Structures are given as C-alpha cells and as structure tokens.
Image (cartoon, rainbow, N blue to C red; front, top):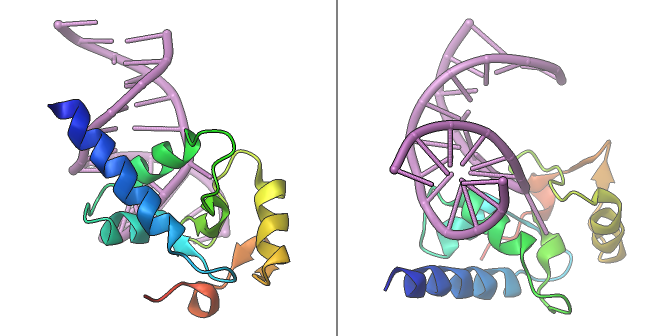
Length: 102
DNA sequence: TGTTTGACGGACA
DNA sequence: CTGTCCGCCAAAC
C-alpha cells in the first residue's frame, strides 16, 4: 500500500532527526539523504511541520542549506539552538562549524 | 480531476 | 547579495 511507504519514510526521517546530537545541526537535504531518499528535502520539511505536539524530536536542529531557519516561528528555534551552543551570525549558522557529520 | 502550496535544494543570471 | 527556474511530491483546494 502506498500509505505504508509514506508512513515508513516518515519514521525514517524521525529516526535520522533523532540522531542529530545537541550542539550540531543538519540540513533538510542532509536528513533526506541519510534517510535514504535523496531529492526529498521537501518531504523532510513537511514531516517536521506535522510532528505530533509533545514530540521529543530535536526538529530545531534541522535548518536549510543556507544555514538559515525555515521554520515559520524562527525565534523559538533560534533560542533552542543557542541554548545548545549553536551560534547564529546575522541570521545564519556557519555550517562549516556546526553541521553534524555522522 | 486539475492546480496550488510548501519548515527544500541546486543551478544560473 | 537578490531573483528566477526547475526538480521533487504529499496535501490541501
């Protein structure tokens, strides 16, 4: 069934995001690759946008390839990242320094 | 059933 | 740096 593969993709994405360590970040495209679905960065964004309330997933550690925050509520995400030591300079994270490298 | 949207990404001007 | 264009595709319209 098609719905099952979608469900599977979602769980794989959750798993990858859950593996991002505190103080590091990953891009949507990076998560998609690690989840075994290249070119599906939008799917990653969609999945994160529909996380169940109360989810313990570190969704705030996922940013776009420009090092910027895509979340509709940037302030919240920025604070969470800074609490973990991720520094933002003029609205951007230096991926050279903070990108998670499995 | 056809079209638009969106927490993206990369190429290009 | 800004802006356009295209690939991607599940959901919402």
